[in-house]
Length: 285
Length: 320
Ligand SMILES: [Zn+2]
Image (tube, each protein chain N blue to C red):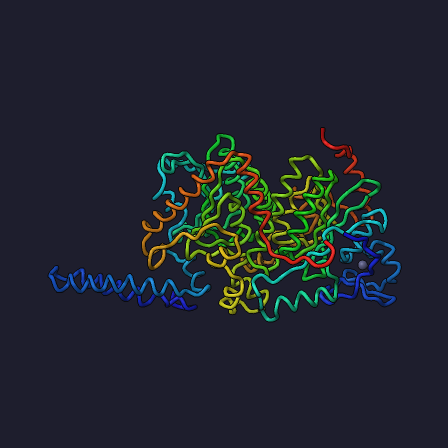
């Protein structure tokens, strides 16, 4: 365990469209307006013109939710191994090394312990820029430990998801992380410690079908893609074009899968308000 | 199965045809001797071929249209089966079967996927791909089992949860997630057997148990070989490579400590001898069920938690 230095997120290659380059100006992916980078950063990386939420790195996310820089990273030493010796067009080991060099060593989730508006909490933020936020053994282990830690310390748990789903390069072991995490969340629920799931764009596959949908509260950022099957798979299966807005936050809210859609600028305040309404912070009798 | 290396069964089918032809001829000593010789050869050839199946060939065997499905095992191994229907929320999903039955005198709950044999039944059962209401029906029946202290026997055979608009609208992900959490919390014994395809989250949603068994030529994977190939190789035709790389056979899963036992199949696979396959499944399920039934409910739950909690492989670097 160690105190995380204020580590600026390094440039990432996997970030597709939504990464914010280091230049002075950046173009919004949604409205194509040219934005001043510093202004964007001050505005929670929300486009001031159209409200588009740029993707955040895990450290950026945690800095927005924790009260200060003094939060402690939990289990920073866990590293993916290559249990299947997996190779597709590239070796899994090489993909891992590139991701570690480009993004950081924490795999696809950073878990921290700290306070949110004065409330002691455990927060896990997924890192989409690390292999599309995919869930393998390390993500599963960190979240299971986060649950057990939240239970032991009786601190509410918040998990912020952004993920393409299970990590195929770890095969069946990735699938089993779903069961492992769901079981750990079950224990937390029995102990009546709150768990809030926050979903950012995109949250799909095995992540949605395990912890993302199991929150006491399920909260999403606006217009995030959230679902089990990916839109392309569904299109190929049913051979139809998908309706406008399908699998977006607003669609899920309408279909009863979410409690709230919350703008990123309001997320911390909303989480604090909800936690205080649910939880008095004292240990169970 | 003639494309995609599926013709590995050809020598077996040829021998069977020959035996049938001879059996139709007048019954004399020479024919009988010849048939006897061919039967021995059939057994030997079946064993040889099935001992050397590639992961992709095992995928084809797991999907074989004549492979026994969960209801066939219920039929062969249980009595007094009462199938129960509906999730009490939206519909009855025929891709999932659920109910109560007697297994070797013991009343049990049964849940499983069901693919369907002929075209009409396949469509009715959506090829064994559940929608949320299927998972919720299974959960409802498992909750009854928990309430009345009946062990749960789960049989897994699905390509996966159905990827459709309606399934997403009604919370496919939520339905799977809740099953995972609740199956981990039940106090009653749960024995899971993968009998065919263990396809991703739709399989796991019935797959949390005290023991997880796999038939010798069944598969269990995070995504189908075709799906994996099209994502990682950008080419669905690389499915054989994907099947190799994903380590989806029963032997692989035993090595990775995901399953507890491989249930041997008769020579030529379960579809060549469904009664033999059912006998082997029945023996293994009974043995594991008796073992976990001896534990106290709390002990069983704790061990089940530990079992799944321990899954995964990682390294620990530096300060931890
Ligand atoms: Zn914009």
